Image (tube, rainbow, N blue to C red; front, top):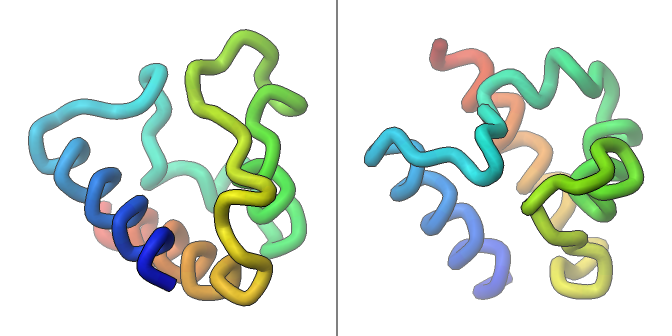
Length: 81
């Protein structure tokens, strides 16, 4: 859970500064990946969806049990537009 919290804190801090990894706007991720399974697959392996992206694969870094909380957070970002 600590890894997940660190990742979420880093993403939140970057967004507050107007920075986004590889130009990605996580606030729109839930629109591009409309269900939890698709969003989880994208988080686990972004290059499979967007070759050349700078966002690294998170599979094996984030524990399986942490994905539901991360997905909920990403969806919440989209709701705050």
